[in-house]
Length: 134
Image 1 (cartoon, rainbow, N blue to C red):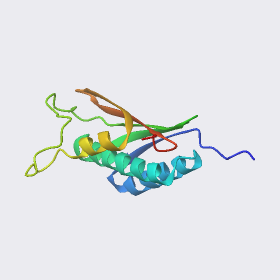
Image 2: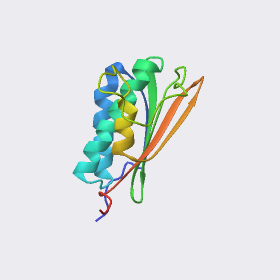
Image 3: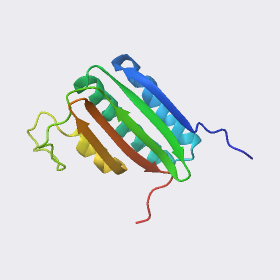
Image 4: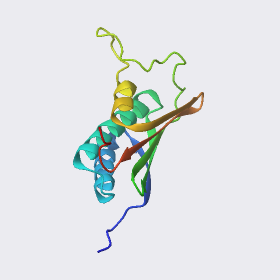
């Protein structure tokens, strides 16, 4: 039986649309056959990226979600000033006010790629259908 597939979808968003973005990511992941646990992690990661785009990237962003043969690729971009060069890949100190979002996304998703320029940030990530073998 053929499965209805959303092969690729792209949307602009603002802070008012973050709920719709989370719902779209969840729906697309599940239609692509992504496990419930991985779909949940993907929604958390993309929600953080989208919120960062709104907060730090000029108030809006764009999301591109693509189904692949083995999972889902997502790209979140904004038009903000870019990320600081010193942005660490390590967990911030317990008393740090911010900085945990990208660390969390790095730990939830595979193949994270961040492109940052003075014209904006684009974050690409991949979530496989099933959890990787231990």
